[in-house]
Image (cartoon, rainbow, N blue to C red):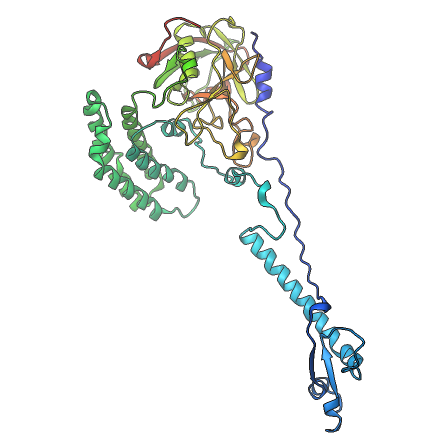
Length: 479
């Protein structure tokens, strides 16, 4: 079957956009008086005369001078002597009062709707998708770096996940400009520290016995190390955001190392029909060496000497996409990508689809939804309905498989791409329009500064599996 690189590129802009307009119902306030429901009220003409400064009449005439306000208009003769006079005197005042009341009510309702939107009468809010937090938030809490996405994807001990979640919150709090909420940060770190100390036995017992000594060493560093939780707490009390950021990164790195020791394999069983596919039961690292096709050089982001051959490292996540990573890792080991030409679009760097069609497995689309314990196969996610992937595409340097030429329910046997995420091409939640449509299986962790320098015609001189060979399970025979 033939690949369709152009189709793949087009797909990067064809998914249902999150920024599609939502029709907002117009609100109108109608204030009216239904004369048929008013009761008849009569008052002494003496009071009316005093208010209107009309000369008073004799005492004998006063009992007869009865008039009605807000009365039904009918043919009865009661109060008929003064009906027209009273109406002329008081209806303008009444009308002005009603108009002012209506205007006041309108203003109050508009203010309430702006401050705290609530469904109004006859407004059916069912058109709003459940993922309104995704659609309306300008900074949806989806991982924005490959390192964060990879940490969140590790199926580890629940206590370690609680510690991680408390600390990950600090990353968002540090983004707040000007006055940062150091009090909240301190509470989060104290909570994480308490769990780490109180649940030490549970944390360490989740590590295989042959790795427990290494785990104990990392645990000690997490608590009292140079970049550990105690140090992080001290920097927060000093209100030093730069040091907080450095110590936070160190603590999160220690947490990820412990979690990886706690998760030596897959936490779910693969569907029986895929049991004979290559699979990756953990993490692996692939290194690409890339050269310019025209013989020019790459320039490191931090300056320095231009280089002819640039290194790009990608971490493969078998926990979330075991079949996709297994097939990819096998292709790397077999040397399928050595000497491969790259092609570029505005949003992706694609591998050449000229590789033999028989190379690689036709792996089904494989996406792990957030909050789930196993991937979905042959199924895309509906971002507008609140479905988010564990490995999001909306990260610069995300690595995913292109779609198969015959069906989008399958990934290409061998064509992959680096995604060049750009927020200006994203929806309101900062998510790619193609989020949840491709099998994302890893992230660029080294060489992200090289990606924007790659042009069509540049070449992958070599691709090799640096780590994770022991996590790669190969089938007895190819299907």
